Image 1 (cartoon, one colour):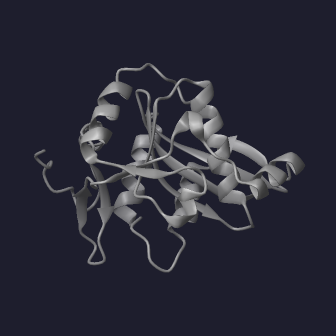
Image 2 (image 1 turned 30 degrees about the vertical axis):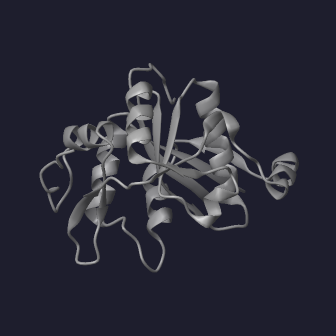
Image 3 (image 1 turned 60 degrees about the horizontal axis):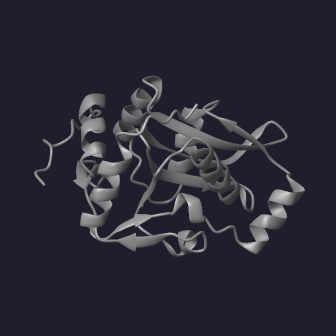
Length: 199
């Protein structure tokens, strides 16, 4: 797999970004401000149709203390995801995904409480694949609720692949696991031709 050219340090051209995703690559900002491409081996995924909802989250969902919105505050969701001590979501990354959002490829799933954004996630939709980028939570369980809402939407709309890039201990409770990059690329090739509409 030949990497694309180095990303523009000010932002990434949307066409180049979409081509990279379709090839199994994604960008991240480094500590020095530069942007680099990654294609992990192994690769993290969450099985869309075998998604595990932990007991505590089931209880939260039953009480339904939140409102779920989609794409109502995309830029604010990006800011929420970047609001941590160390982040790969630099200003160029922010601008790049905001451009993808305006083109209809990047989406946010937001968790609201009392008209306040308290958690959410964002990612890129391409064919029948959704590439999860980042999530955040300002109150307990908000990011988990966003993930459950995302998977429910992907199930309802016939998506085939939910890419998490890497697997964290947090994601394993939902069934996230690693697969070889070769298996990931095969699954990606099968998912991309699907006609799935996120919104």
